[in-house]
Image (cartoon, rainbow, N blue to C red):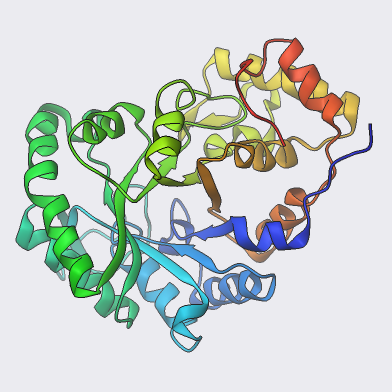
Length: 334
């Protein structure tokens, strides 16, 4: 069979720019580099952008707003997040939570009605814009919240979501959902509430299919549109297994992930398919997935991702992965 191509329009509509690196995640990015990246993504057809107060303590929002503010507002979609409030502090550490050279603020959790409104209004101030297309409740999962997880879930249902619904009625927000890398918290929320959108990081990728059995079908049935982050699983699906030096979920990859990735690389080599192309194109085959948000740090990474999204992948490649047990039988492929 002939290779299957993803056309340029598909890239434009379904590849978005994630704003964590614009907040100086792990290493600094200059204002000029940040602006060049947003401009290059726009020139390449990107019209979907995501950020959060957490990303550099407002730095990502400020940079993204500066780059987008002069463009027609209805020509792009922009999302941010709630759950963390920023308070000014001239003595705040310049490196916190994995971000460096951040703005002089400290953050604290606040899922209350008042905190949710403040968070959205503060984000709009930093962005210099009058509305957000999507707002995600950021990291309400048990791993992040620890012993407070049960109370946070209850507050999310009773306070945060109703507050966002009110902001939606006021026109400050158009869609609401969760931003998380945990499948369980989404399922817990969907038992009691309705969501419009979901930002899911790392849980539906070429090697991690944990969202597939329960969550993706439910989102499809209930009309929850999914934007996927972390499709490279923080590095391993961009770099390959690399003799054990790769990262998975922002930590050194465990043997299980190294071995699985190495097996996929063998199939990639046999079919002439770059690992990055397979990682970007695979999750978009599921009808619940609307887009992939790429956390690019520089223009060359964005340009490469656009090329990988358009790289031809023959059906035999996906069949080989499935036959070797590297993809679930029920996983849809491009």
